Amino acid sequence: MILQAYYDIEQEKRKHLEKPDVSKFRDVLFWDTNIKSINWQKNKLAVIKRIFERGNEQEVLETIRFYGKDE
Image (cartoon, rainbow, N blue to C red; front, top):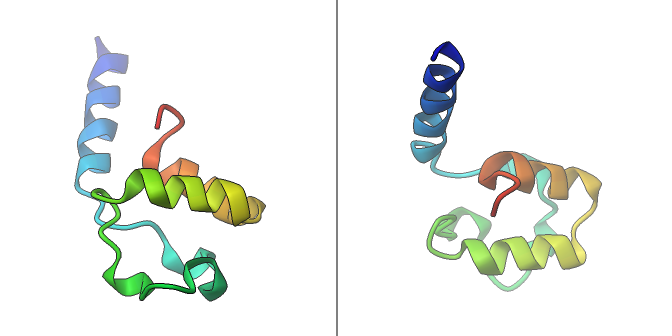
């Protein structure tokens, strides 16, 4: 039960995250848009695709941290 409680707390924390640590992303990765104006939840499929296609290891790891492995 305790593990489930910790899991539930972690899931709630993730829901309230607005954006990943954008300092870990290179500006050229999102050359066609202002990185500060990205809706990270609405556009998550496009963001994940772009980072996994063009990103370096640090950017991929930050994406996994933010969205989780399931996404």
